[in-house]
Length: 315
Ligand code: HEM
Image 1 (spheres, rainbow, N blue to C red):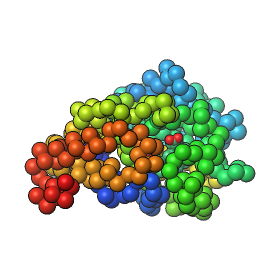
Image 2 (cartoon, rainbow, N blue to C red):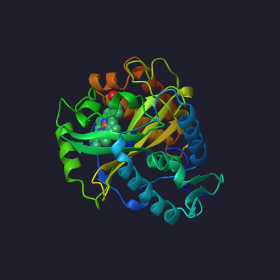
Image 3 (cartoon, protein in one colour):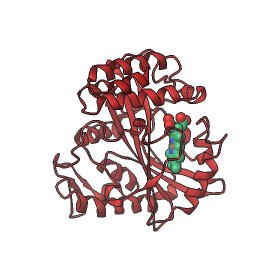
Image 4 (cartoon, rainbow, N blue to C red):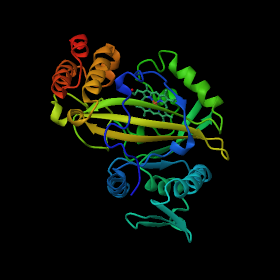
């Protein structure tokens, strides 16, 4: 089937192209809104499993969000078969995923259209609605959280959701993001990237990081760099904002087989070393930073493609 040529490392914000803990929004071309990749089947199968069996909630929605959820599903049903005709087919009141043959009847999801929407794409889907205290999380189908709990953040405002994120409420980021949300135009969607490090290949991390220390004592073989590709667009009908999160969870050891592996390893190392103590603590990397930085340097040296200057500058 489709879809993108890139295999691992489709997005590498840690190479210096973005800065961590910044807003970093860029205009989104809607043809790239949804991003199926070679993990499509595996991720969708994992979503099915989680929507069926997960212990932590993976779908929550306020009762009056059904029309907005339906709007999201409608946009996807319009977009997906047109953009990816060999992946999706819509006919006879149902949508079919052509590779697996999995078929969903719309009538089965009347009360939860966002759930069906989320079963069609690798992305997690979140609806934000303007209320008295700013935008609030009013509905979400969230299979692959990056160490946060939907139950905990459900119904919360942006400042509440980002409590504990360095620079969000104690800096300029929160107010600027609030203004961006207020002014987000239907025809001006945006996207951003962030990264974190994990010591396992799991996609589903529903425990807040106070409990789930993401990287304590890990070595490169288990280490994964997790990139979230996030998009934001205003829904034209409801005026709500749809937030999508696509997870790229790549093994760091695979830098070794990547043509740009040394540059990526050194870029990640540099951003890791530049994190402030607050940012480091937020990312649960206090204990592991020095060792990971050292391992990344060794990895870059073994890749063989980095110049002597690059390595000397890194030391
Ligand atoms: C322009 C929009 C946004 C910006 C600039 C932003 C910024 C950030 C930043 C810098 C972090 C720290 C992540 C890291 O680098 O490790 C973060 C975490 C997070 N963001 Fe956002 N965010 C935005 C939109 C949203 C939206 C719409 C949601 C709705 C669900 C959301 C939910 C979260 C959650 C749950 C976390 C983890 C919080 C925690 O650790 O408790 N963000 N965000």
